[in-house]
Length: 319
Ligand code: UT7
Picture 1 (cartoon, rainbow, N blue to C red):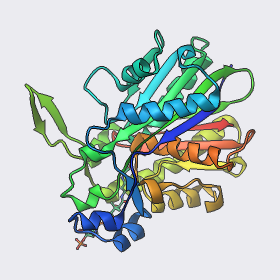
Picture 2: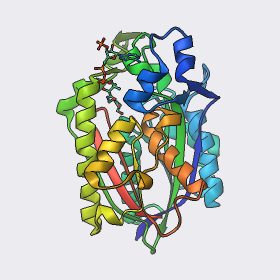
Picture 3: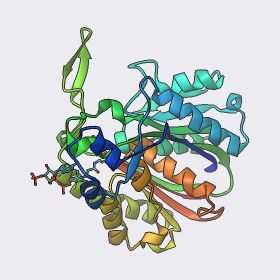
Picture 4: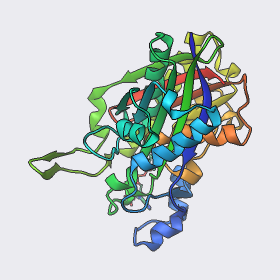
């Protein structure tokens, strides 16, 4: 039994915010620095009060619509997010309620920018086990809420958005291999080291990062995990039609493509227009490439993510 992708959807809040717009808001930065170091030209930022569940709901509706699936028929809903609406209930339960589904298994996955790869890998295992038949997998983030807008080294890198897919049980090939990994010894190089205690925020509630350490770690594990899922599926990277890496930085994406021998023409890139939307970045890019006709039925697609934890993972599927 395979899990097969039958619908994609995505949603970006508001209008694009350019690098010049950020500089105009008093951040000591410029378009040239951001484009040269990251490839990012613009990102979308949610208006105050707009939540991950609202972005995720819109992406989910679009994916369900493409799949022709009624929300009531879902039996699994997984949301990957590090910026949930509440401590609890989970964002998955909030979206389930808004979709009008009752009874499905619903929970959040917290693996930061590897969150979508984790959620997809978990959903695949639920379906392959035979226990579940129709899954909604969402990556939804409002990372702008956890950015220190005084820290120019991080605040220019991220954006808000959501992407979703619908999977169903099938005897035709769908997801061919997944791999999920973590190394908690690296928790210090990318984190939001704050907590709520006794009604107060304690520690530091903003994203902190050692950019160069993250860069090196990301390139290494993104190429390793891509090789791992290809080997598990008995394919070479040359047989992969499309690579969709986590959209953090064009230099990380290009270095990973080079290590894997995948040329730029086979890599889906949205980081220039979305920035880094963490768990939403891969399903946003996937939906864009499905809707504009680049990804076609029967093609092999490799998606992969890496993020705080450190966490990393990949899935290889036939579309
Ligand atoms: O999901 C994973 C998310 N994380 C990532 O993708 C981050 C991976 N890391 C990177 O992409 C890069 O490390 C960065 C783009 C974050 C930074 O590039 P870098 O080449 O490592 O720059 P740096 O941090 O060493 O900073 C170089 C200079 C510094 O100035 P001085 O000390 O040389 O005078 C910074 O203060 O660039 C300065 N700088 C900026 N200048 C203009 C840092 N941020 C900015 C900025 N605008 N936004």
